[in-house]
Structure formats: C-alpha cells, structure tokens
Amino acid sequence: MFRTTRLKLTAWYLLLIMLISFLFSLVIFIDVNRELIRFEHYQELRQDRIKQQYGEVQMPTETNPFDEQLVFEARNRLIASLVILNICILGGAGVAAYFLAGRTLGPIKKAVEDQSRFIGDASHELKTPLTTLRSEIEVYLRSKKKTIAESDAILKSNLEEVIRLQSLTDSLMRLTSLENSTANFEKVDLATVIEHAIRSVAAVSKGKKITIKNRSGSVTLHGNTKSLIQLFIILLDNAIKYSKNNTTITVRSKIYGGVAYIDVIDQGIGIPENEREKIFNRFYRVDKSRSSFDIPGYGIGLSIAKEIVAMHKGAVSCTSNKKGSVFTVELPV
Ligand code: ADP
Image (cartoon, rainbow, N blue to C red):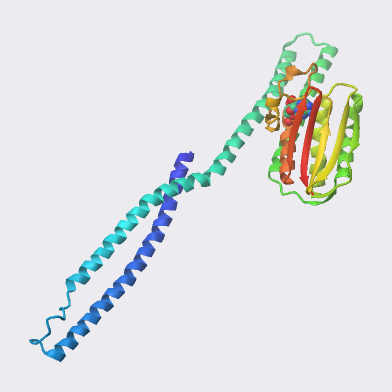
C-alpha cells in the first residue's frame, strides 16, 4: 500500500518540480529571445545606415554583413540547452522526489503500523478473558445437575473476568484519549499531586502492610493535574504490586537545572536490566514467573505513564537491582 502511495506522491512532486522548471525555462527563453530580436533589429538598422552612408556598391569590407543564420543558430542552441537542462532536472528531481516522498510518508507509515500493532495487541488481550468467560458459561450450561454453590462459583469467576475486561478497556480508552489530547495546562503543586496519588492507593498499600513515605517538597510546575495524579498512581500502584508485604515505598523530589526529578523507590522484586527499556512499551510485561505471587495486569500502565510524561515534555526512566526499583520522573518546572 505504501509503495504505491510513495510512487504516486513521487509523481506529484515531480510534476510540481517540472512545472516550475518548465516555467523558468520559458521565462529564460522569452527573455533571451527578446534580446535576440532586439539584436536582429539593431543589426538591420545598422546595415541600413551603412548602406545609406556608402551606397550598396562601396560598402567597406570590414563591416560584416548581418548574418541571420547566426541568430537562428543561437536560438536553436538556447532551446537545446534548455531541453538538456530540463532532462537533467527531470532525472535529479525524480530521485529527490522519491526520497522526499519516503520522508513524508515515514511518520504516517509508522503511525499506521503502531495503530495496527495496538489493535492486534488489544484484541489479543481481550481474547483471553472473553474465551474464559465463554468456556465457563458453556460448561455450566451443559452440566445437567446445577447446584446453587456451583452457580455462585461460576458467576463469581465470570464477574472477575468482567472486572478484568472493564479495567483493560478503561486503560485502553485512557491511553487513546491521552494520545489525542491537548490537555489543559495549569499551575500545579507537585506535593499536592503526590499526596492525592498516595491517598488513592492507600487502601491497596494498607492491604499489603506497605508504608509509603512522602519525602517530596513543594514544587510548582505547569501541567495537567488529573494526568499527573494518574501518573503517580500508576507508579505507586506498580511499586505496591511488585513488592512483598511489609516493605516501604519512598517518594522524593529535587529540582536541578530547571527540572523537577521525582523518584518513586520501592523494595520490590526489581526489573532485569535487559527489560528496563521494554517495560514502557504497550502490553509488555516482564516474565510472570519471576515473582512468587500472581500479579494481575496488562502491561499498559507504564505506557500511559510514558504518554503523560511526554505530554509534559518530560521523561521517565527506571533503575533497578535485586533490592528494588527506582522510577524517576523528570518534569520541566
Ligand atoms: P502491568 O503492571 O499492568 O503489567 P505496566 O505497564 O505498569 O503493566 O508495567 C509493565 C511491566 O513492568 C510489569 O509487567 C512489570 O513486570 C514491570 N514493572 C513495572 N513496575 C515495576 C516495579 N515497580 N517493580 C518491578 N517490576 C515492575
């Protein structure tokens, strides 16, 4: 598809370049031709003047008679030069137009590829809970003797799958809405944002007896409050998810060279070095088997975090070892 589009775009670029080149050649031809006509006319006048002065018979030998053939040849040479020039431009412009078409289509091609990959991955993630739901319902319907306890168990399991599906679709919608958004920016106090995020995950951290220490100072920056709260909820939620019970999570901040650095430090299972770049990709999850406990998720959280940070012209990175991970958010202040 992109090959044909590239060729079509090349043809349009080429047409435009050749049109401009042709117009320039025409202007040059008209201009030079006008000069030749003026020259012809001047030569005729000169000839007439000499004839009147000396008479037809006694014309001096050093006054060359006007040669029309010379002007004719000059005109032909001009046309030939312009044709050769245009052929050269056609060749050069063809290569340049093909290259430019490739450059123009490059970002569009990448966006289309990203979108198809996203649709493919999302469908794949949706398929698992849907298949589970379907097979559970089918098995239940086929069973002859249905007890209330069995029905309750099936419904409970179905509800879990529906909740999983709902959280997945919510995350997907958040991700797409972020990509298309030009969020309203306002003055934001980072300390308030972090406090809000900590409050939102308090119930979950309490459940795992995890202490969250807030060591962040007051920093005012330009951003979107809702998105920034969401960003820290994602990082804190992950820190809780990937940590064992009775551990500590610390949030600290500092400003250096016009940039606020906010660290979310956990004492969790850590992330292998070769995975640290990939975890920000959509649907990417590090091998589940590395933790002794089953951690629910779809690998979307950090890609949302990355989008939010990009929206704020900042960055997010991760360092980690066996004692835990540090997620650092950089935001311009
Ligand atoms: P999810 O948590 O839903 O799988 P994320 O995009 O939030 O998706 O995270 C991607 C992956 O990065 C996770 O599957 C996990 O393996 C890893 N990860 C994220 N945060 C942490 C953390 N604090 N400690 C250890 N691993 C983490």
